[in-house]
Length: 127
Image (cartoon, rainbow, N blue to C red; front, side, top):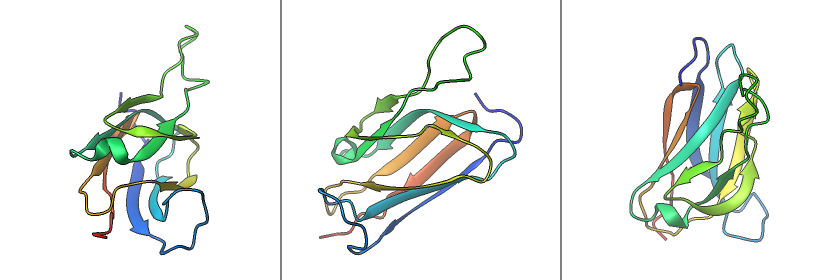
């Protein structure tokens, strides 16, 4: 999948209640398209036994179909459901996403697409 000049950088942090939502979503996942071409996330995977407790979802691609009418994206492995995140990001665009989680677990989120894989160790608090 990798395309020249496409890259994502990612991180995770706790906002300590600064974000208001219906679920425990003070755990933030952030990534930036730091490359020179539009990024497309095709797949997200949670590594770790509690991955299914992470609320995360991707929308399907509306482009990048090579004229074949094939939609890609929205493939999740070992992740729970959540609100859709736009899987296309132009250069410089940032995403700051709250996700639900189970305290005290250890999970790494892996994003795959037309860029080298991005591994984000989630900053899940112990309690």
